[in-house]
Length: 93
Image 1 (cartoon, helix red, strand yellow):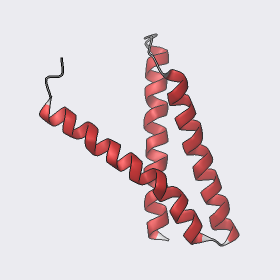
Image 2 (cartoon, one colour):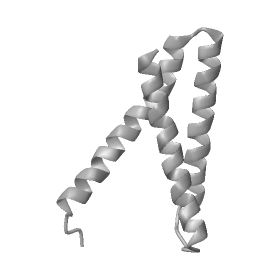
Image 3 (cartoon, one colour):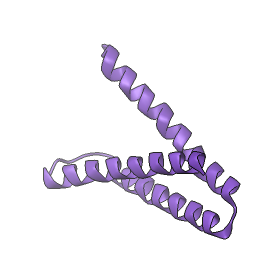
Image 4 (cartoon, one colour):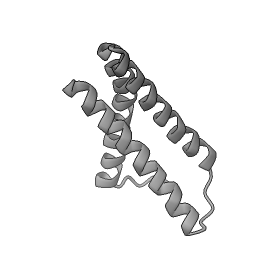
């Protein structure tokens, strides 16, 4: 159950961070490309979390863990990549 909850929390935090970013862009009235894609990603993460909750309630914890960790691994890899870019500040011209 701890494995499932860890992946679930990672997914929920990703949805909250992306939602906060969308809210920030909306409140500051900054035009941004790809807002539709970000909204779609947030919706998909929320749907994934809902499906995993359904699987847990149905008694299939293994499937629920796999569902949340497929997305959580991608989120972790992306976060590490972004942190490395911030740390090393490459000069991309």
